[in-house]
Figure 1: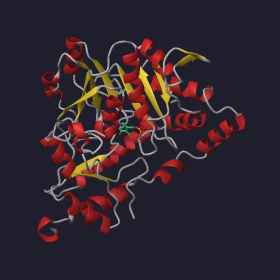
Figure 2: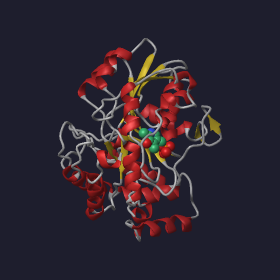
Figure 3: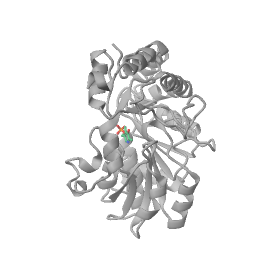
Length: 378
Ligand SMILES: *Cc1c(COP(=O)(O)O)cnc(C)c1O
C-alpha cells in the first residue's frame, strides 16, 4: 500500500527531538504566549525574510486577520473587491467574504494552475483593494509585473502561502516575502506541518503586524485593554516548539520532494497524462520556486485512473473536486462559469509525494500509471 501522505512516518523522521521538545513545554507549565512562540516567530521571519511574523491558530485565520487589519487601518472597507484565483482552496475565498469583502474570481493559467497574472488588470475596478495570489500546489505565483500593477492601482498584494512554505523565487525572495502580507498554514499535511492546527502571518509592514497581533489576541495589546474587536487566534507553545524542530529541516525536506517530482517527470511516460509544467521546463531539481506540496497530473479519464491506481493499492487525492464558484456555500457565485478552472477540477489527480516517500515507491506509482491504457481500461 502506498499512502498518499504517510504522516506517521513524517512525524517519526523528526524524533527523538520532537518528543523531547514537547516534553520540555509540558514540564514548563507555560502553554500560550511564551518563549517558544516568540522564538518560532523570530526564526520563521528570518527564514521567510520578513521583518515580522505573527503566529495564528491556523492558515484561514492568518488570511482573515490580514484583511481584518487592513479594514481596521482604513485601507479597505466592506464591499471592496479582492482579486483571487478561481482555482484555489476555498479558504482563500472564505477569508475575503468573512470580512465583508467581495471576491473577484480570475481564471488560472492552464499549465501552471496558478492565477493567470495577465488577466488581472482587466478585472480591476474602482473598488479593487487587493490581489490575493495563491502559490498553489507549492509553486510560486509571481512575476515582476504584478508589483507594478499593484503600485499603479494602489492595491495590496496578499499571498496565500499555505501550500508553498520554503519556495524561493528567481530573485531569491521566498514566497511569504513577495507581497505586502502573507498567510501560512501549518496544517499537518502541509510542507511545514504541526501536529494539529497552526498558522502565521509574515509581513514587512510593522504597523500592519501590530494590528494583526492585537486582532488575534481579542483586539488587545495590553492585557485587559482592548483597542479593537478582535478574535482569539494564536499559535500555542506546543506547536511552536514542534514547528521549530521541523523548520530546521524544511529546505532538505523540500529538496527531497523535488527528487520525487523529478523522478515522476522522468519516468511517467503515458501520452494521455499531462505532467506539471514548471517555468516551462520539465527539469525540476534545480527549480527552487516549487516545493511540490502536491504533484498534480491531469487525465481526461481522471476518475478511472484514480480507481485503477486504488486497485493497485496506490492512494491518490483530488485537489479539488468542486471549484469554489460551484459550492453551495456561495450561491452568489453559482451562475458564473470558469472553463479552465472547471476543466482543471475535472481532470486533476494528486500523486503520492512527501519528504519521506522513497524512490522505490515512486517507481511503483510511475509504472502503474504507465500501464493504464485508455483503450483497455475505459
Ligand atoms: C490549507 C490551506 C489554507 C488554510 O489553512 P488552514 O491552516 O487549514 O486553515 C488556505 N489556503 C490554501 C491554499 C490552503 O491549501
